[in-house]
Length: 121
Image (cartoon, helix red, strand yellow):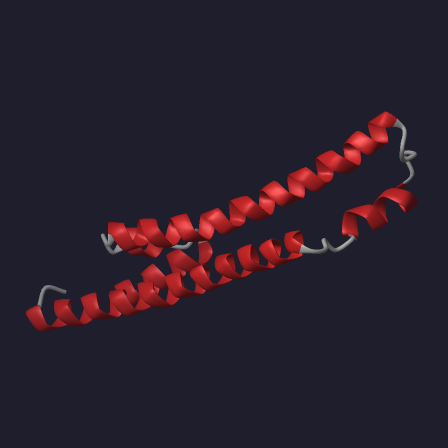
């Protein structure tokens, strides 16, 4: 299997940026990993905050422990600036993942071509 395909698959299936690490492109791999994981961390933080708020309300007795009352609170869409930041974090995560896969393939293909020209395959 070519380095381009291997790098793209690793980046797509493991974590954005890991394909670059496979190609020994550590700086760009670190950048892509950091950007995508920062978006993911923000999304997880928001999910934990929402769960904490709901559980605090249940423990204080403000909400009875009833699935039919809790489920709408869990699935309720955020509003205002929270919705904007969650949307931005989601797009940052998705776009950085796609950029990671495409760039890993592009750089792997360039490496494959240089190896073919030098006859080291």
